[in-house]
Length: 568
Image (cartoon, rainbow, N blue to C red):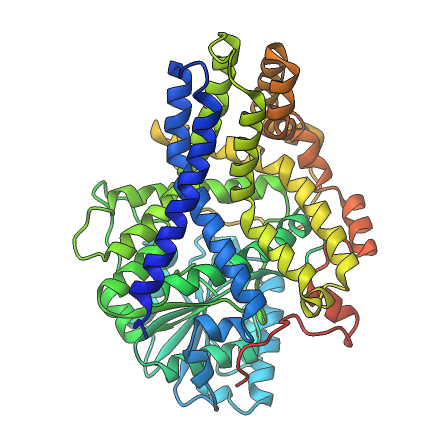
């Protein structure tokens, strides 16, 4: 499975190095004239820290776009076992659903439909559905059990287990199941409460695992479930395009050292139980972002972890509004920053350490971006940047922004070039309108999101902690007062930065505005992106509609996967 790995990884590393060198050269070209001030040296240090992620994003996107446009079957091109995956399942797979204080009225219907589909296909005896509860609150337990009782009565093969203590959070929940409840199952499919997977997608994953005995995990892409609220509609429209290009490019060079994102993935029980058991950190705290650690430990033990970059049949619900999204980012950031303590542990492969470092860079770049912005302001206000050519600064900034947004731009390019992809979104015109709306929103939101990450990581460094609390999954509006209480620091930061750059020059202000206007408008962005009336208008206009939404409205719409993977 890995005979091409050294060559591919060498070529990819050379591409990343060349792109990084180009990005750094553009910055040096901007600051070098007239000599480099202390502030500019510090800016260069910040850029040096963010460039690896930017170059990696751009390289993944270029490789992914080339495969998406050039390969007849992109998922099979990067996952050869897919071409050998055929026939009904021979093994038993546990469908494990991790729940904690969930609205079971929203959780259960997709799983009832899944069981019915597996039954209709004559393969239900190969699957066992388990609800693994970590609910602790007595009233929530009562509601959970009351909702599950009729479901379990209607589906005798489904099972429910609730732990008395949620030790280790989700990772502990899963391992407890494997230790005490799993019997003759060969695989388990890890699902979250908001996960939706179709029977064909699950059967495909099982067939891939059966076709390749060295596979420990196959992680499928996860797209957003059709959403009615404006914020998730906008966010997941671009995220879907970006993940398609990013994951395809990354799967090409990572090969057997792929990612695990914690759900909508199939795992082989025996190696997972043997090698993915997580201990606490040195300070006694549990590992929060468990999924990547489990992946690199399996890789270190000689098992393969692969990504299946196919969208069809695998979805989740995204946060319904900006506050929930920011809180989720903080939880992920707290978990990813724990990886600093794991990088030096023995027995990890070099690529496994690189994956952990990549996860760190995903969040560590945020304070560096914010620091570079503050240093640029100080450089201009003190006159140290008087001889800096603003045209060269604008070019360097644009190049780094292009690299930052490269995944979604590549995904958008693929959809606009390939008619079959655009058709799943209602045609090129409908897709282009959605892409423009999403990109305009994210241009404002991304700097605000980075500022929030930077603020949280600063608090984290001084002892703040992000718990793994239940998520709000319901659509709702947000009051202006609530948004102001949450985002007034972001607004003040944006106003201060904007006024500061305006005091330097008009050119400085124009270059800085893409980074500051979203902060200034933080409160209106939060309120309007959760506004029920705006959300209704977007749904009525079909703006940012995903293929599954259009297929549900019109069964004649082409399927969501423009180039479906090998059918089972």
